[in-house]
Length: 316
Ligand code: NDP
Ligand code: DGY
Image 1 (cartoon, rainbow, N blue to C red):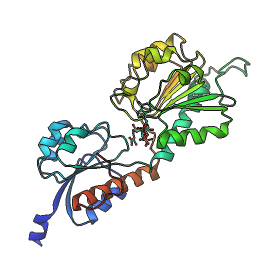
Image 2 (image 1 turned 120 degrees about the vertical axis):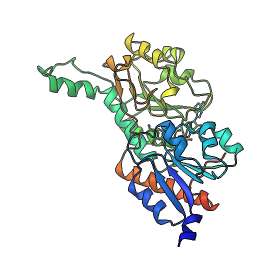
Image 3 (image 1 turned 180 degrees about the vertical axis):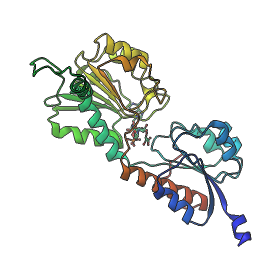
Image 4 (image 1 turned 90 degrees about the vertical axis):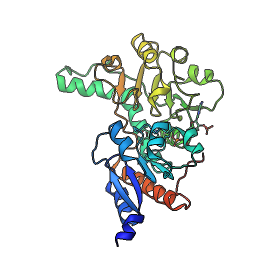
């Protein structure tokens, strides 16, 4: 019994995760699991301490897994499993160099994220938060022909930047609203999409190429009546340029599920704008999706520990 316990591999989990995932890890009988048992992020010093000697690391998108963390983990580390589809928080080149495998959670969160993105688009375009505020504050004096008018999808042109799993799922959900044209961009010039779209939805991954892609020049090509939506990563947007575009009337409105930094400070200028709707990165936040993400990330981790094929391994 004691001897078996000594052979268990060490796994470090950087946050309290849905019990579906923890159950898989703890019942597997192959690893000793330590958890940063909190809903809040693990402080950096604790992460560096907790990961020491780990064979497996289950992390979140809010954990920066860089050379310092990999060094702190040391040579035992075989697998990093992230509870996310995005992997811009991982120092991929360094991880690859060390022969560490990476698991992630594509597909299982596509529907939830696409649904939230559509909800955000509608909330932004039809000014739902403003309307709700007016009802609560007594600003609703009467039905008024020109009050709280927004923009509808029927007959519109929608541009999707990043037509991957989520981008495609968003496009499919928008089509039945009567969208007339769907434009998408690969890595080609964006000009036609920017000038012709009534709604622009960003759903690409964050890469050196997409970092800061939505900047002054980008917004300057959009229609004054166009609505901008981002559910990819905050750093795809230059937020100073977005503030300028929104406050000057260069574009009509923006809805963001992701920002830089996260959380966005409560005194951030974007929060002063009525035409900017900001959500706290809740794209995949349904109970069922988060449970399935936790299961998948636990199974990825176990497969990585045992050298087996992972259900979802990131090709490095
Ligand atoms: P995919 O890899 O399926 O899609 C990403 C898409 O972005 C691909 O089509 C890719 O094209 C495209 N892309 C990459 N670079 C560029 C570029 N320079 N210009 C235009 N398009 C580009 O990933 P998912 O759809 O599963 O997820 C996308 C992203 O959504 C994640 O990386 C994550 O950041 C974010 N996300 C956010 C969530 C939230 O809660 N708000 C939830 C889940 C994900 P190519 O195939 O050619 O590389
Ligand atoms: C991801 O998975 O990358 C999202 O941002 C959170 O689900």
